[in-house]
Structures are given as structure tokens and as C-alpha cells.
Length: 281
Image (cartoon, rainbow, N blue to C red; front, side):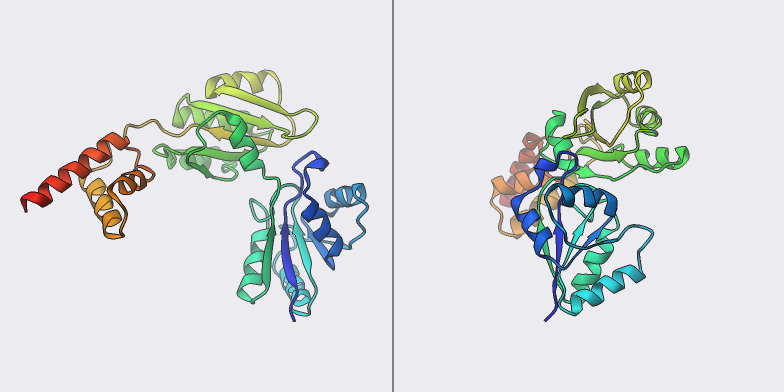
């Protein structure tokens, strides 16, 4: 009988943030596949766990994933951990997870700390709808092109960034996306945790004056475009599709409002107009 791949979230800073279930799994599995065994060793030593570890990072993809898969097939259970937070997000864990799933191996999530959600909830920006876009490209031209594709994004956006590139990235954000509200969370849950809230230009001033250090997560407000670029036909089509699926008029309006950057009142007007046209027909 094959083993189980456990996807275990570990602390993003404060070691006390680990869950009891995560500690239990780390003790009971046959092997821990770690993005950085040195970082994981500190965690295991802190909690008196002596489970064997093996490196699994971006330089050990391919063949290493197959080796771990063979172990799982033989009945061994493996815990997958990243440097910090939840594996599979901006780290190589996704490859192993996907390989295990395609081979019928049980994949069990052990939820816990996550830098994206941690930063989002303390940012003060809207949490109703958001998107995670990983690390922006390193090269200036590619980074500006990347941000230009996000100009119409109305959801709150979350990014990771290196402290060494933070100011350059903020300057490109300002040039392409404008001076929007922003929050920058540095060293979350650690001794020198910092949460900066302001706009992009003030963030540039702050982190030019004081060079940032440690892990950085950026939370940026979405576009406040009123939705003028959304056509009437798009709204009407979306409403009809919702109604055809059996949604009530109220729920249809809510569903369309969650997709298009148009006020609910405007969408409701479309709904009323559609009903009037149907009655005439």
C-alpha cells in the first residue's frame, strides 16, 4: 500500500506558530523533504524531533522528485516543507505534489502559517477579492511589462519581493500603476516585524532612507476604474448565464459584481432592463 505525502505548513518566523498537528506529522513520517534542511533542522531541534530529512529545492528537481515518488510507492510517508509557510507557493514543492497526485498517491494538507494571508489581513486594504502574483520579474523592462498587464486589475494584489529589489520595484509600480495605497510587511512574525502603510511614493521615500532587510511581502490596492471599459453586452450575457444556472436575481447580481468592476446598482439596473425587454417580447 502506498504511503502519504503530507504538505506541512511551517512557521514564517516565530517558531511558536506551528500547529500541534504539524508537529505530530513531522514526528511520525518516515522522511521530511525540506527546501532548506538547515532551516528545517532548527525547527526540528527546537521541538525535539529526530525524523530524517532530505533536501528538495529548485536545484534538485526532476530526478529527486522521482526518488521521493518511489519511496511513496513503497509505502513510506513523506512530509514536504518549505523554508517557511505553506509548501507549493513560490517554491519547488508543486512539482512533487503534482507528481504524487498523477500517480495516485494520497496528498494531505497540514494547514498553517502563510505569508500571503498574514500580510493581506494586516494591510488594511480590501480582503474581499485578491490575487497573488509571486515575485515580479528581476529585469526592469520585463517588470514594467509585467505591471502593465495588471493596470486594470481591480482586486487587491499581493507580491513577494527581495529587499534588495524593493525600491526598484516600487519605482516601477509608481511609473506604471500610479500612486496607489500600499502596505509592505517585512519580517512578519519575527522580532523586527514592520508593517508600513501608505502610498507607493511614500513607501519609496521610507525604504530609500532606511534600507530594508529580511523577507518582504507587498500588498497593493487594485485599480479604482469605475468599469467604463466593461460593455453592456458583457454584463447582460453574464447575468443571463447566471439566471440560466438557476441563480436568483439577487445572487446573479452579486456573482456578476464579483467578476466585473461595476457597482452593484449599475448591474441591478441591467437586470431590471433585461426583465422589461423580456416582458415586451
